[in-house]
Length: 221
Image 1 (cartoon, rainbow, N blue to C red):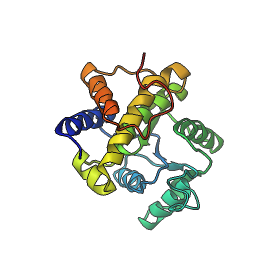
Image 2: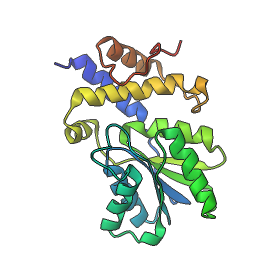
Image 3: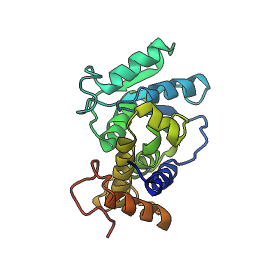
Image 4: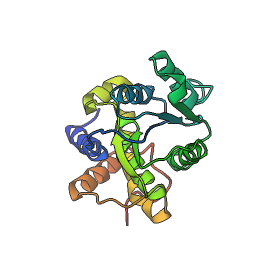
């Protein structure tokens, strides 16, 4: 049973994780690999709306995608885009990345090798990973403008799509922990975390929503 307080805290984290950027035309749209084909669908939608002339999908496999996407996340994203009518000529694939940092570094290398001049990136992730993806890209690719995007959906709609509310809350908590500790490790830029968001995070940790936490002190102290 999830308490009313936990639901309220989870909604607060959900809202914080989303950047609230308005998509606009960029040099390239990069879809970050995951279990969620919705990332590919959103990339295709943005391409068809003229927001990017080129799509790049990045990602190998993870324990959660190995069986569902045996050819690799980026390859399955590419196949999805082709099914939805995107020309093969405007899709690049980066099939090796196994974390967000590698997504950014390896994608940058693929674009450089292809001779693509990049001044701005439409960075497409799962809804609750917008801020984490943005912070990582700003650290590793500081000279380009980063516009965050994800499938437009509410917290309730996302839970309905996953069919596991506790897992979703665990993921929200895990994503926030990384925003707190990764800047000191050089993985992403530091971003201000409002006090009410931090309080919600701490309450959720105390209530046991911890399956996605890294094995370290879960606070920023």
